[in-house]
Amino acid sequence: MLCLAGLFAFAQWQFTDDTGSAPVNPDLHDHLFGAGADASFRFVPGKFGMLARQTIDFKARDRFKGRRTALGLNFVF
Image 1 (tube, rainbow, N blue to C red):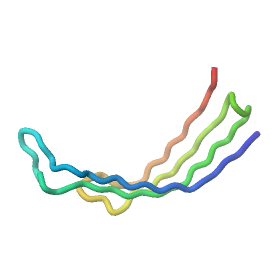
Image 2: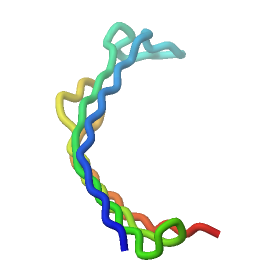
Image 3: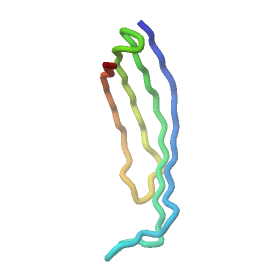
């Protein structure tokens, strides 16, 4: 069994103005920052594993923010 763990961070920016038939705030550019931790467990390296990730968003402007948890299973055929 192999266990890997790590930290990550991200940032997203909107560079262009909103367009369409009725943009609410066409000059307001969205952004979002986040950070979190993840871990993966490989029960059979290269064939079967599991992933867990926790993300916390902050400094969101005109975007949803909060906490996200993701769990996953990996199978290689």
